[in-house]
Amino acid sequence: MRIDIVTIFPTFFDVLDISLLGKARQSGLITLGVHDLRDHTHDRHRTVDDTPYGGGAGMVMKPEPWGEALDGILEGASDPVVIFPSPAGEVFTQATARELAQEQHLVFGCGRYEGIDQRVFDDTAARARVRLMSIGDYVLNGGEVATMAMIEAIGRLIPGVVGNPESLVEESHEDGLLEYPSYTKPAVWRGREVPPVLLSGNHGAVDAWRHEQQLARTRAVRPDLLP
Ligand SMILES: OB(O)c1ccc2cc[nH]c2c1
View 1 (tube, helix red, strand yellow):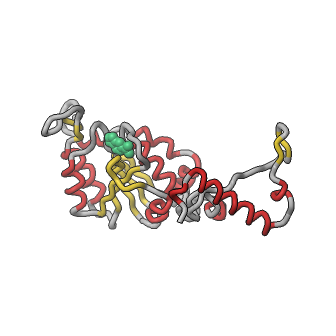
View 2: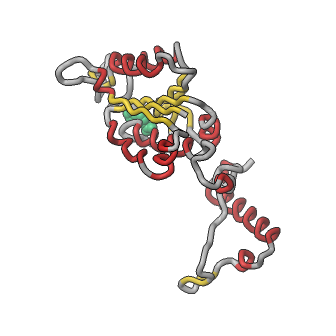
């Protein structure tokens, strides 16, 4: 998978050189391109924003630098999905991560200030699949944190990135439920015992207990996930 990111804070994504995603890049499973939006400005101050038409507080990101940056990425690209993190976007879920992990090329456009001139979305949608994505009902200062979260959620689902693919199966949201509680040695810690069923060696009983724990947790914390 190729991933391109357009941002005014390119060093924000240096962290993608480490851990699982860093290994995936070294092995060629993921190819990453980080593009500084200011490299697509042509004034002395490298201006990327201006006051909003219609008035209002804050600044809006100018369309010209975005147009030039995306032209360079989309030219010759093979059917990428262009994702703009936005509080006004569809909610990114584990199902979205699974869906996007199937793609060959993702482009993330990280907005700042009050957002990006709408014509950038419209112009890009005329030549690529565009999706505005929200990672939750709260507002960040820009798209970089959301992009990092989505890249991690998507990247870990790409075959070969996570060593043991079985570890991807029993996770929260994979089967529509929250995950069961986990325990490891010691069997007693500060007077707290591991649930005896987990020490029983009875795999059927363990599976049943874990499923019940998933249901109980989901009922308590995320009843909206239940069918
Ligand atoms: O909360 B968010 O996901 C988000 C995304 C993009 C921008 C651009 C300016 N504020 C933003 C917030």
